[in-house]
Each structure stands twice: as structure tokens, then as C-alpha cells.
Length: 275
Ligand SMILES: NC(=O)c1ccc[n+]([C@@H]2O[C@H](COP(=O)([O-])OP(=O)(O)OC[C@H]3O[C@@H](n4cnc5c(N)ncnc54)[C@H](OP(=O)(O)O)[C@@H]3O)[C@@H](O)[C@H]2O)c1
Image: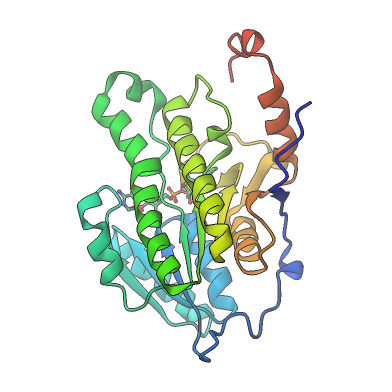
């Protein structure tokens, strides 16, 4: 069985073990650190923003649906002392991404991108527009946006970038290979970014959540052992980003084993499986 990459870590972080960070949320200048949460209407995004806000971070929620993001912002602000604001963007509007970053009230200390679209594999096989949307939403847009932020982090000399990818990108499967291929591209982009920026002190984290109970998976029958709650993912992202405890994380430990086994199946057998 192939050994997992040495940079891969498992993070299953119960609330009680989430790092307590009285000082980590404050910049050297004594100001609260700023999180840019890209995908502010997502269930995982909302839980992640809450984890940072609970630790005293200022939160910028970026979303294409401002009204829904504002509801999340109000909820987080009601539960924490954090300052939370909403910023409109569309990840498919790639021409507008630079202006979006330049229009933010501050260059964030940490940027987390959770934008994604599962799409419909059957539809994507015959509808090029749908396939294009899935590919661009999961790969092109997030990669370009994080790339813009990365250059600004390099110029400043600090920053953390987190991209939420998927185990679906670890090996293409017949049931979701358009989504999986886009996530594979995003995973490779994050890997290259990490490789380039690590010597410069910029931390890049790839998150592969496994199954998560969110609106994306609503109605699906999910195995409990393999299925995380959004709050669990949020805590794992916070721990990986801020405690520097991960480069590539599988939120539930068991997913590393599952994907190692799936990755080791010879292609002549794999092509006959219905996964
Ligand atoms: N749930 C799982 O089992 C699972 C497993 C592995 C990986 N993931 C990944 O985790 C991330 C979060 O997923 P989730 O489960 O929290 O699902 P979700 O609630 O559906 O989140 C998807 C997010 O992407 C945003 N988005 C889609 N297209 C966009 C666009 N053109 N511009 C801006 N934002 C756009 C959505 O905004 P709108 O509200 O405007 O649509 C939403 O905020 C995704 O990248 C997903 O692929 C999820």
C-alpha cells in the first residue's frame, strides 16, 4: 500500500481541543487579525467564519448572494464579539477578481476559499455549459482568486491561504469526474503554491473534508463514520491555518486510509468498479 505523502496530516479536532488563542487573533500592531472567507453563504464557510470569529478575528464574508451572506454575518456577530462585513463577488467573473481584492477594506491575514459547485455529472456529460460552470467554479475561479491574494501576501511577507478541495480530486470516478477533475486541478494548484511560497513564510493549506452534512449533500445517504459536520470542518480549518498544524488535511482521519486504498487499486480493476 502506498504511503501517504509526508505533508499529509489528519486533523479531527473536537471543540475542546481547538487551540485557545488569546494572542493569535491579534496582529503585531495590536489590531484584530482579518479573515477573508470566500464563499460566505456556504455551510462550511459559515462554520469556519464562526470558528475564527470566536477567537477574536475580524471577518470579511465574500459571497455572490449578499442578502444570504448578511444573514450569516448577523448570526456570527450576534454570537461573537467579532466585526463581520459582507463583500460581493462572483468567482466566475474572473475579470473582476483583482478589483474585488483591491476593494476589500483590508488585505486579510488569512484567506479561506470554500467556493464550489457539485453540479450534476449526468448533465455535465451532454451540456457543455454546465460542465464549464462546474470546472470554472471549482478550479479556475478559486485558483485565480487565491493566486491574486498570494501575490499580495508575498509583497507583504505574510499570510495564510486555505483552499477547500475534495477527496473527489484524488482519483477520478465515473459518478463525479467533472467535479473531481476540477478539484484535482485545484489541489495541484494549491500544492504548487505551497511549494513555491513555503520558503517565503506563506502557509498554504489544502483541505479535503470527505463527506460533510451541508446543503450540497442534502438528500444523500451518507455513511456516519465518513461524514463530518460543518462545525467540525470549521474547527479543523482553524486549527490547520492558525496552529500551523497541516499542509494537506483530511478532516476525518479515516479518509486518509480510504483514499490510500482507493488510490492503490490497479486501473484494470478500478475501471470495472462502480464508485
Ligand atoms: N459537503 C460536502 O460533502 C463536501 C465534501 C468535499 C468538499 N466540499 C467542498 O466544500 C466547499 C463548501 O461546500 P458546502 O458543502 O459548504 O456547500 P455549499 O453550502 O453549497 O457551498 C458552496 C458555496 O460556493 C458558492 N458559490 C458557488 N458558485 C459561486 C460563484 N459563481 N461565485 C461565488 N460563490 C459561489 C456558493 O454560493 P451561493 O450560496 O451563492 O450558491 C456557496 O457559498 C465546496 O468547495 C465543496 O466542493 C464539500
